[in-house]
Length: 203
Image 1 (cartoon, rainbow, N blue to C red):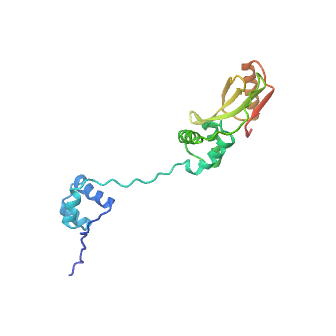
Image 2: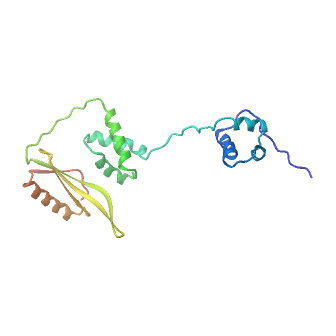
Image 3: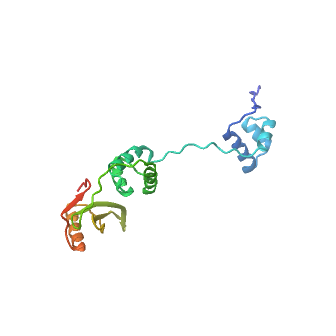
């Protein structure tokens, strides 16, 4: 019976994974040098050299982020509305398929704003008292009522002159709820505005 020849590696270079495997078997699994040499088809000389060397650190790989595919979209949104908050941008990204969290988006928005050094020409609008309110929805995840999960929304109304804010949490964005929240806001502010400004609301 002729046994097949076993080729032993006696070259100077081993890749990082192979060297780490040597250390794992020797220090972690407590295999003998002879057993490791036979298992990995290495010469004793090569094996001893790598056992005496420190464990190799794998080269770092560039990590991808969930925001990468949406960076240009976020930049366009900020160009159209430089004051848009990360919460508002997140609401606009959700229908486009973005499934990342608010933290990663807020970090990128902060980074993007800090990189925009060139001043832009714009007309500053200073509405008088009671001239205008700005209205928008916010989304705050879901609430679990004994297994019944319901979306939680926030109706937000800001008086543009004083920046006084009214917020009401609801489980609905229906038109009826929308109107009712307006009435509650005007009652809390003790008056109505000449104009109500909205930001492409679906309702």
